[in-house]
Length: 322
Image (tube, rainbow, N blue to C red; front, side, top):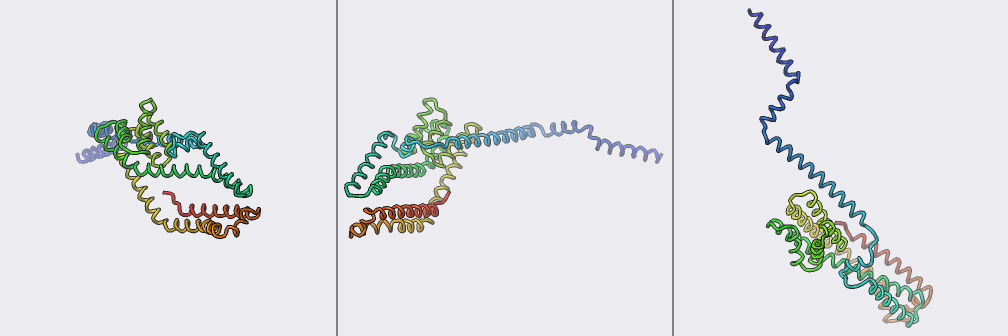
């Protein structure tokens, strides 16, 4: 009797081991697990799949936007330079006429003073070609700085408007109405373009053409990705506003740290022309040989070249990427 019971228990043990490692009821066990877990497991899997799909869509949208921005780097026309400088009412024809008139006037003054052709040509080129472009670059930099100072506050207005339940178009319209130029003007162009049927993506590209700053590029990337993939727009723009303020704070630190080097560069760069001007006013006959003789003209050209290289090197040393 004892042997029969022992044999029966041995058979049951061997059968249990075989059943445990056979894997024949694996599908059944998975069904039981799914039944016990209920809809929570399915919802978690669906949420994970949706999050992964949204992440892939965001990456593809970002790559597409960067590709379009890289393809758009072409030669800047004079019309574009005038628009970026805040002079949309000035035509290209008027700009070139004014530049030619300035070159003729400066060349005529040099010829009237008895200067050589080299000095006359250099003065006409500098005042007729270099000075107008420098003025456009100065106006462009001033306009971009003014835009950047108000842009973070404009994004905050959009964030509060979206949180209060307003659509994105109304939030953009509020910024266009309440902010001064150039922020208000650029957003007004964006809103007016949407009224004419221009998509938000195209309007943001035009805004970047008129205001080619990193801040506008970030704003365009956020808006484009949100439009294509969805998500919390107010949270994304709020994070962007924080990033822009951090960039401004970093820029202020860079200016404070490089102020001494900039002052030294300005003093060193202004000494040679300042001394030459003082000598020309006090004893013009002593320095007039530089303007009347060919050797003096060559020396002036060499000095201008070396001074320009020195100023360029010092500018590169005190400018930091941020």
